[in-house]
Length: 470
Image (tube, rainbow, N blue to C red; front, side):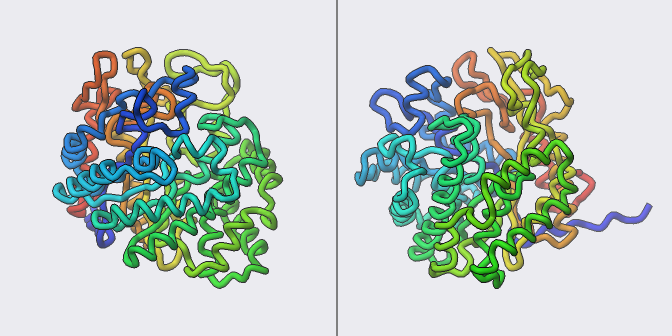
């Protein structure tokens, strides 16, 4: 048989895990604790309380050691705005001290940190409709400036906002995140514009303080152009030489390019695509963000393309009422996280579509969900496990690298089973966590697979250029 060519990962490539503050830290929304916009939902019983979560705030060194044991040399975390600014205009310097200690601990272990400045939560005092307010982009940029002033000594890689598209859809269409609106299409459009504008302003604020910073925002990969790639295209249009007058025509061409490349994503996606186009017409979408991009000081307010890749086909997330799911049936028409289809075969096309000349690409999240219900772990109905998913997606990533796409990082979501936005039933961790008897970590994941060991072996092999590990 012919020799298999050795793999050469792009310079500076990192394997990491992605986490978020609210999902792991603990000590939020309880009596006397900092409060974010989930406070009412937790206190009313609408969702399971986050409680101690994974106690990352108190045991961060243990978590970082686990990341190293899983083969990581990068660690993505977020800073909880509500913890750092518990009262409008009053900063908790002790909280910032703790975050600086966490960043120092990352560096001591050879983990390059990436800090996200908004991962789906904001302080309770800003109110549930914060992102609908006209002043929200400027207020967010003010928070970013304060955080970067205090943390820049330990970090140069920043995510301004996690999944602008995913956050807006879940908060204003699906009702899955506060404020919990259902099918509020006008609010969706307004929030998307304000969130993307906030990124542009935050990008400028960071670079004023740290000129060598690498600043990005990540999208949840989606077959719906207006709810994914359009946001990236708006950010890069000016640098691509597109005039403001020609923007709509250029975006329409980019949309057709995606539709062709993805084969239309199947007939089931067509009605959703038509609805999305009617809600977000290209000539009216994102007016404030477009103005900030074209009038702002930076030709391209983006230093890195970051892609969160799960199942990108929108129609896959809709299910008939009463459909079977792990552990029973559900009558909601939206599938559970543990029912998300595994779609590694689509990853290369998405990475290709998101490639921008002159920018590296990072897979900022990718993972597999399973369910644990009252201490019982349920297998996925499709038979996938975390080790197999890691191999399949990393194989797709390598294929993209072979095409010449400059991918410089892969972050698995997530290190350990954590609070998944209202419930501890969905499990994404390389390490399983038993919550029936306190919070006890396992060396295996929730399905009994050595996922951390699998990730370590894959990372070590690929760093050494050995494709056979796939």
